[in-house]
Image 1 (spheres, rainbow, N blue to C red):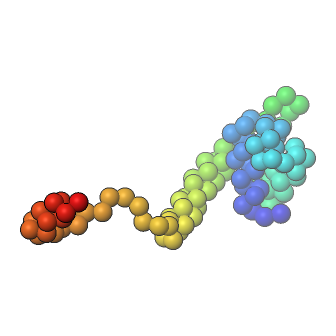
Image 2 (cartoon, rainbow, N blue to C red):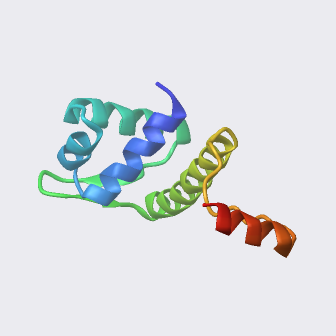
Length: 110
């Protein structure tokens, strides 16, 4: 497993409020979501979520981890978007300064 997919899964669990909701959003199974969360908690060494048969809530450490992870992933996505935009075709209004004599000739020749 990798850190990014597990952190993304944790964020989705918190936002959806359940493993099933996160699984639907991530197009995976609840079992896969559970394994990623378990892997993440094992690596960090702290419980991030309190689980009952009816609900999933964050621990204090989980709330801190969620906020910092969400901020970091948002910044990472911004970096990706900026990098992609370097190769995009320019778009927008192009203004060109010309002597008025050329402009008059241009408009009359259309």
